[in-house]
Length: 511
Length: 128
Image (cartoon, rainbow over all chains, first blue to last red; front, side):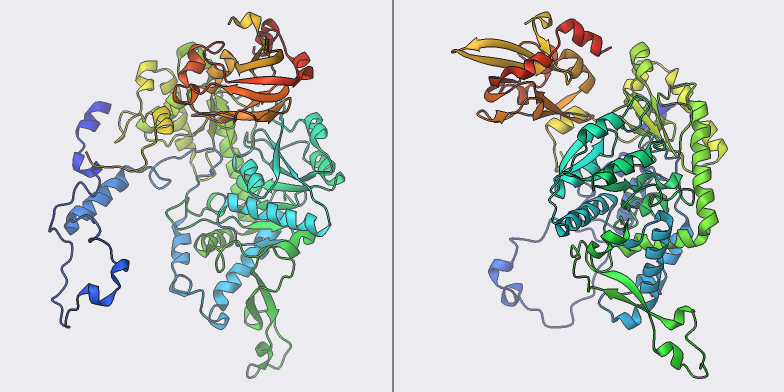
């Protein structure tokens, strides 16, 4: 079955657009020039001119359309396939978000327009700040960071400014050994030394190791809760108390917020700062929909250091002067004016141009307003229910070392299968592609050998989860050799990852 | 070298201590267990010769398709030699971890760290 499908492929669709080029082909022809032509040499100085025209591909319109449509069919996406990519919360991206973000009153704005003509956009951004604060239980918000990791970096710079203001020079950031790799990287970029704190066999923070590493040089403890193992840290309060007792701050990596919306708030369990991933939790597209965002929320004492600008709301004087309206200014939106506030003397400055990447923020806003507070809570309840249902089925196929309950995701291990049948986590991941499932995250976190990290999200049906489990079982019963060469139905089968890392060829050239 | 003649750190380095020109020198590599667990190696970042290293602190790193891992020095001292053949032939680490796969030689200035090392039998026990 696999080979047949492969042989039916038209090889033209996987050639690069440069290989498809034929001199003289055009998708459009311009009318004859009706003004006198000037030589380019007379219009621009010679040192500004290229040696020749760029080597652009030359194709007819149908060839271009087929090329890109065929390429798009090689893709796996949430719109085409179940995508249980742990830690990435690949939930369905509702199309109504796209419609909202594409409304001309939002999509066609220019950031240099006067604020008077941007009031609707600014109101949305202000309300998003307020909503994110409410969900996190924290006092202030910046929508500026352009991605989750950028939010981490921004928050750590905020922390550094806060300690600088206190006259303290703290040098260390603590990170558990199952954290996202972005945590230590952000710490290093912000100028801190990243120190690893161990986790126990159960997957929780090792309090003895935390005690050993806590000192007056610790600025921030970065914790992902629920963790990358899909577990809620039972010692969260103790961890926060220990860090706070030493004067340090708690940073919550918000990657896993999809498990706790409306159920528990990071600000209530000890976090001083957190980021959100709108493309995960709030159903923005992962790439393809434009640049990302990583809004952060912080406590009151850290608010003065947030990047500028923040969106502020003020009572509008014109509101009360409307004809026939002699009453006090009403609470309706018409009585408020929104503006970008740059007057924050202690700010760390700008981290992004203009308002941040509003495209994905608008989608997050549309999603949050669509569901409302009760709806958001139900999202998390269903995400946790789906993950536990899938765990209860998968655990009969692949052991789940950290127990039989989870939050929004769980980490199974292929180590027994590797030992007994030479089937590794990577082989299972690759083979799943042949069955039309995107591969789960593998080999992360490193604390679980042969890790397979599965996050179904709330948007999948029981039928999808059952079908996935059956395929997973079937794969583990297959011949190891078949799996070692998988996938068999994709345009490219098994890339040589070792050679790619040792001798990367970064520019493709047609043979 | 036979692993039975070597000392091992909790962090999976092996060490052989010998006298060289009147100084104690530790030759260091990674255990066969560690190489196996790292799977396919893609890169090693060797330390500069002359670098001062502290006991139980990372001083170079090795990268596999799975992860980047620190390599710790069990002793305080100075790097006096590194195995320049490794970056272009990382497979040596797997094929001969206790011989041609040595990583660095450190002239020991404080050997206190040696007392924290295990013999091969105790290390094998840790890896179970």
